Image (cartoon, rainbow over all chains, first blue to last red):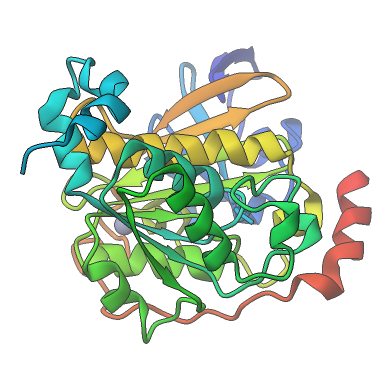
Length: 68
Length: 277
Ligand SMILES: [Zn+2]
């Protein structure tokens, strides 16, 4: 199935979970990364159980604390 | 109040723009912006807002200018090392444009001073370098119904979003709570390209100008991300979180919170090692 990850369309196996996607995309420190699917934030409770489907658009939003 | 001939000349490149005109320039001259942090982000924001003729600019910072600041904090110069950053910033801003009234606050923001501080300004720029301050500013702006620009930078990456009361998500809608102390590196720990601070701080100034003149689309409900290595700008849609602790339907935060401040020095080496792996 095709999923859009950070604006890029990519092919993944059917039934891919969000946890698997986070591993495949090598997301560093995922506990501190906000995830949105189709513009809806995934709550931290749902992160473990969310399964992706064809056409989903996933964004990873990272903490950026710098400004100094 | 009519503009003087000198002002008409000084702001002629603004006035000629149909989105600005004399009317918009007067809005800038009557406008006020508070910049929190006279560092990498605050420096370009302060310079461009002063040059643009924003009538009153407040600048907050407790630190003194350090040699390691000068790679990116273009409002300070080598001769300013050791001087209070707010003093150095004020001198640079007044040198560019004597029209501008600059108010300096040589202090750290915290829960006891932030609400009063932002109250008298039209727009707030978060140019701070730590998560406790970013959440403090967000919550205070939501509680005081003040628009503000959030930005963060690290390495070759930057992000920004604009909060406007009643018009979309706040910073906390997206990021919920500050990460634990030292969990996410700051630019002091991980490094940052000076031009990144320049780019993102300038975009914050642009948001403030658009807000003051009331033209264009702000980054409300959007997170703009900039990856300089890929030379890629992206706008990510954000929705307001109805469960947000400060701007949601049943808020639990009614006063800004003092989260623990991180201490950069001790951890700098550790993060530098981990980031390279
Ligand atoms: Zn919120």
